[in-house]
Image 1 (cartoon, rainbow, N blue to C red):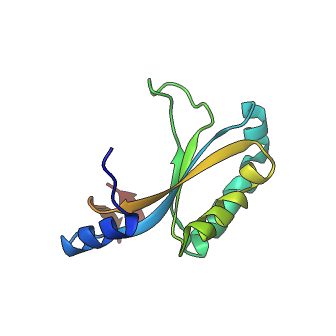
Image 2 (cartoon, rainbow, N blue to C red):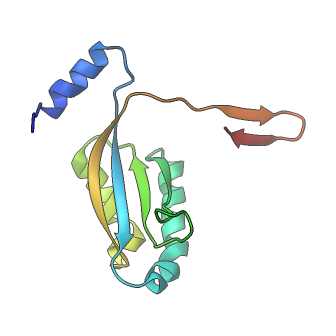
Image 3 (cartoon, one colour):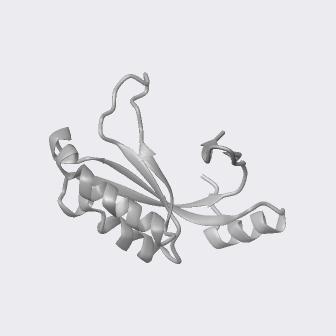
Length: 130
């Protein structure tokens, strides 16, 4: 399998004019029953909101199963961090991981392409991500 250093690839992508935003993806899955996940959900959500308020959380949410009919407890968190070590610390401090309800895999990720569209209606203060 061909390989290239991550930093060399990052520089190449930047030279091409793409965003090249370095982020970290936490792929999280149940370590046991969903009962443990459900029991720790309030603390987990509080932690996610803390990460959001301090700017470390880019996005987060659960995965459905492949048929899009069930939730099996898996999720994904995308973090803004200065290093892999900082991202690992943030992931390890998630109450779901600290208590052992979930395990995680941490992957460096580079955001290059895509877009986001926001609709804000001034009259009623509503907002929508399209």
